[in-house]
Length: 281
Ligand code: DGL
Image (cartoon, rainbow, N blue to C red):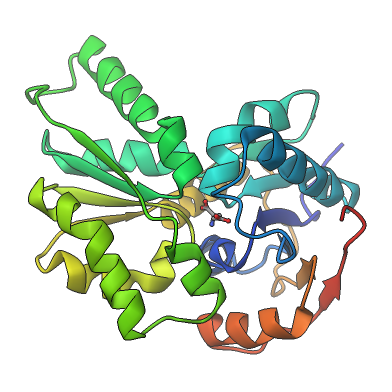
């Protein structure tokens, strides 16, 4: 059975996944996209593995019931705590955001320290350092890793940043202060690159760069994931075969108007087709 013209399903706890949605839209303009935001239950980053897995499974199954051809867990917290379980028993591919970002970090770091910022749950899971070390070991085995191994992976939880984004506190003094508070110890470790291990953080990119105060390579797992999704669809002959602008459909679990207001600000354009789905609550 060919799924070419089926939509791509994307989900996150909140607005953060829009950073992935935006990148997917940019490089796959014809694809139909369905995006689910769990606005009633955001944030995920301070919840247990069991809870994040339950929420992510409900949403993933909901998207699959809408006939999507792939699901993108555009949430680092879901990707680090739930991805393996989400994939179990499903016939369609389910993508996460950790592996693409971690691999890109290894590629650009040239043996320097790698900093990763994320939610408490993502950082506690150590999902990024696991993939980073696996990748480096694989490169060493194939003789492609030319650097010393005395670099560090600096992982820092920044739990207040998601609520700031969800409240639209994008340029307030308090947001700047909290970013500085989280990032000062990270900057002291002189990282060669900084991985945004939470899809909400690209929305605060300018403030984060200001806090770092020097040129640093930023890894946006949304950009890396979008590239991998495109590559996968091409290689598996799953790209939409009608050349017409892709449609967009949004589902939120609460407060449709708030999502529209903040989402439109972030995307810089109108958001139509938003529906409330709260059957899981
Ligand atoms: N944007 C998500 C992530 O990448 C979720 C953050 C949250 O809900 O705490 O982890």
